[in-house]
Image 1: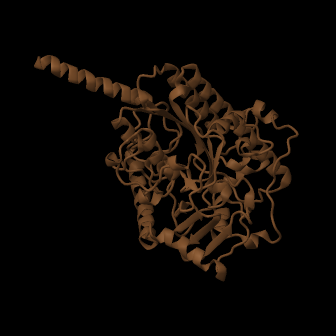
Image 2: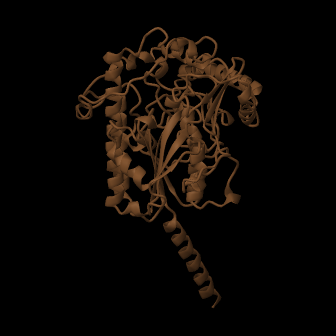
Image 3: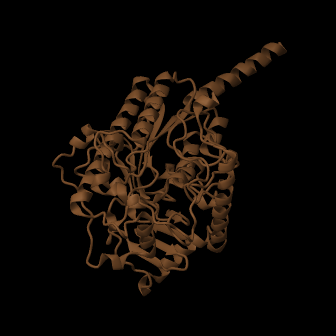
Length: 497
């Protein structure tokens, strides 16, 4: 009798675990690279064609004030996966490692029965190239060592501008980004087609496009023949209105010497950029179809976002790194399988650091099983109600800048603080181009104090300055040894298997 009783208990436990496992939602995150929400049809743009993302937004929740906490590839992804600010995990730039003792969402999910899978760009630096992902479907396509580390004080102007003039646009030709995205996409589709629904999964599909260089297919280029292309606008004496950070970053990319806003040129560049939006939209449509074909759409939460934006000529700037809306704001759309909250638009400031705790909630991971993190779950915001206490915090301390730089977005304002070099206060609603600095005006003194305190409550800028300098110096020294010893951390699934 005791043996039968024990068997019954085991069956009940197994049955409960199986039910719990099957009831957990799958999570699919689709991430583009260097995409701004303002140019998406899903966010109301009248020209850019993104029908699948438009439909996703209609069926889900569209976050209208979502930000990258560090508008740069590797730090942004590290923040998204860990739920921690980049300074708190030491991922200051594209050549900084994410330590193996920092838990990611993958570690939580694996411990709770999920399969965790990555297909595409992630840009992990360091010997740990998985960080809890059980499967990584394609090899590393970016340096995994410290090759890209840059001196903080002796910055050499780079030539990023070359991809933002008409001669840098190539139509119908393949490049690094094309090959990466096609391979990542194909592997993700293959993975979904093989799923049988018995184990919940987290699939992170990360595309390199529309990141420069802008090499769209002929098909997508032709979609914008004779289309009206939105051009950057400039007030008189606009260079005098640039912040110190904007001036630094123009020098960093070479756009202080080369004008990327020549109308005939920037029109071609932006047409190619539009075309790559439609390319990504096609891929989103194919992923959603693969989910539906396998019946996985009935239990899969879909998230679409980007790691950061692209200035693409705004303020005479290119790429990312800055706190401007075109650089730091990202699209963020969440669709539940039952289409809960369909068509909701949420204007509360949120950021990529909030995605990890949101996923913990979706997976039903108890509070007592969680370690500390910086983000806050997005679940309470899904109904569209505003939360006046929430804010987005953005930082950049080493990529193209010469001091610790912070930004806070809250209550319709953006406060940018460049330690030792002044500050900016921008009214985002009245001044969407971010040209008019309200810093120092008496009527805003209380607001500025509160914003600055939000920063100082979370960071020690003096210590952070020391940490950044030490990190850069250490990595520059170690990189020379890695090269002498022939050490290469890049991930290759063929070798791993």
